[in-house]
Amino acid sequence: MALLDKDRLFPLEDRSRGIARALYDQVKGLPIVSPHGHTDPRWYAENEAFPDPAQLLVTPDHYVFRMLFSQGIPLEALGVPRADGGPTEADGRKIWRVLAQNYFLFRGTPSQMWLDHVFEELFGIDERLSAKTADMYYDRISDCLAKPEFRPRALFERFNIEVIATTESPLDPLAWHDKIKASGWSGRVITAYRPDPVIDPEFAGFAGNVESLGEITGEDTRSWTGYLAAHRNRRAYFIARGATSSDHGHATARTEDMSQDQAAILFEKALAGTCSAEEADAFRGQMLTEMARMSLDDGLVMQIHPGSFRNHSAPMLATFGRDKGFDIPTRTDYVRALKPLLDAFGTDPRLSIILFGLDESAYSRELAPLAGVYPSLKLGPAWWYFDSPEGMRRYREMTTETAGFYNTVGFNDDTRAFCSIPARHDVARRVDCGYLATLVASGRLAEDEAFEVAHDLAYRLAKQAYRL
Image 1 (tube, one colour):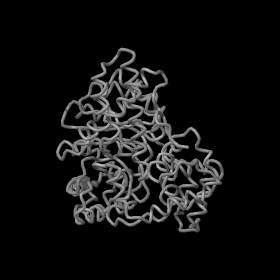
Image 2 (cartoon, rainbow, N blue to C red; image 1 turned 135 degrees about the vertical axis):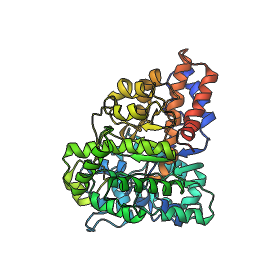
Image 3 (cartoon, one colour; image 1 turned 180 degrees about the vertical axis):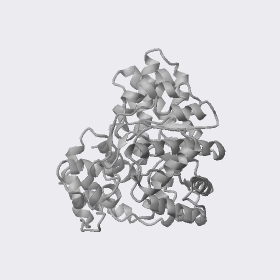
Image 4 (cartoon, helix red, strand yellow; image 1 turned 90 degrees about the horizontal axis):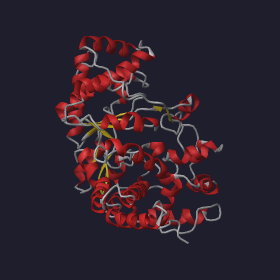
């Protein structure tokens, strides 16, 4: 019995469903453009076999292990590494059995749909994962992973990925990217500039990170002008290795446009570690404006990802480090927060800023109206907790009437889970085709226009927005 329904996520009404099928048939085979994500460039550089099913599908995926942890299963039992190097489960089969025994927890979630897509489409399994089938799954997937056609580069080509962007800190030497390029492999893997460790005064080790930035670039990062010069230097280094975007994961969307003298004083306080929380937020806001200023010169597209209370659990952060499932959405202001930056550069069409959000109430009230008038702004897709069928549908319903389709940027998968990339794009394509079908069936969009829009949402808009 198949795990996947061939008409999943399409409208229930017959006419709309038929239109959705026709639209989807046109876009389902388009190449995948993945302009923002967190896969490891080392995979593509070394092209080694993935170790085992657990390390491929459980241990690195915070969507998976946060659900299991919510039901009392320790992260150590899932092989998630501890910050102190303490013991965690290393037996992949035991980890897999924990997932299988608790797979019912994922019923109705996007994670189940993504995983079932991987199981059926990639590994050819059509029985539901459970305690009874755990070892069969593990053995089947392990056998596949031992074959050359399941190595990272082969999967990249099988997934029909045209380009994928990873995300690296300015302190990263990008050695894996250099190795990919030197290998002669034709797969296009580029980087993105994520300066949070050297922009956020509240980031652990901020002052030391800024000092390292100076050592890498040969600039005097103890001075404001030298610090900015170091960013320009490093951005150029990333651009030379394919980067077309920067990425900014700030707690808020706050921007500032201080005088350079004011900014220099605040920078000195940040280096000294004497910033208040308010001043740290102001410094991050100033740096968004500085990054925009640099983008006018070097062309990097800015991605702003505000609205997450990151690492909400202090004990879990201390034990396991960052990005362990404890990032929680918060209310986010965009209209007032972005005004200083937009007053400075918002009407300049040379600047391209892609806005993301975790506050759905801001979609129709703030984000769509802003993107619907400022030429510098585009809306990123439904993100993170809303990277789901219902979230994607709500996103289209709340933004299209004001921003249209062409002030959005298609879809990006934003994932560390490599094998889920085709599944995530498939969900996005199905949801968008279903939404377009309802517009056609209700007389709000001509059918030939729907076919053009479906293609643009699945492929062209991402390439255009990210300058790929």
